[in-house]
Image (cartoon, rainbow, N blue to C red; front, side, top):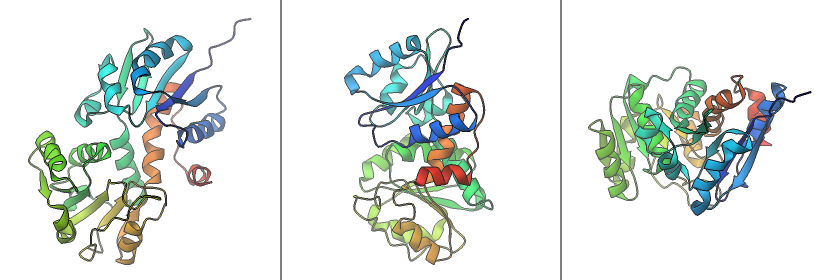
Length: 277
């Protein structure tokens, strides 16, 4: 008797042992009663292309890519979605029937879904967004905020040149604010986002003053270790609606899982609990 092929997917990074993605996809595979595996693969940058070209031949249906491979994966891919092109990085790869690689980016999707889930009354058009940081994650956040109709983005980064580069890439709705002045524009933010790693366990604290925060602002942090950062605690004490960063990780995984394994998984409280263990 012939056996069906068991679909394989992976997360590729360097390092990658810390990734929570195998736990997440493993949970969903089990929940849906699927024969399939999702594994972490540590690949050095110089081997990335060779590994990606080999994976479809080994039965892999797709992969996530994380630091430091997100930009390079985009260059290697045979086809690229519009949103991955706009963000300038890929996080989700789909291996097509003919072995070709399709690159997508679901980080912006995950970011918006997390906000809508954690703050159901959030209205992106209510006013400006204040975004801290200008790294890879910031690109996905900016693209998705502009896409859902945020009228203006006040962008601040420790290195001003990186923020200016994003303004050049994303256009006139982005206004660059000096890092030392970031606290002064908090009162203008209907949505406030920390995309930096500041405040993460083992990293320095985020020192931007939050005194000016509006109580009706929606405040979110991409950091999820700890789940409740000082940034979110301060915002909560001001009466703001706060959304932690774990949901972005969970929601960005949904489209990939669906493409690779079939069913569209749900982001539930049970999933969150499993991921926090």
